Length: 85
Image (cartoon, rainbow, N blue to C red; front, side, top):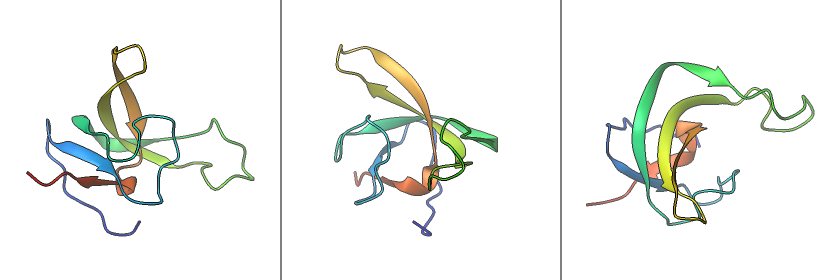
């Protein structure tokens, strides 16, 4: 998780193996870098007793949901890697 990549807008990314902590996207399913935040937002949804409490959400990714809708979600960029082109 410590290997951080320098992502670019419109770049395709995927979860790093073993670091998926949200429902979407699935492993090996591409997501598009939509926005890179200057300052991260912090996840307060999980309680202080979970490993995700105060996770820095510093990237917004675009994914397709189960209804084929284009949706945007905040993520911790350390959990993602670029998809080779």
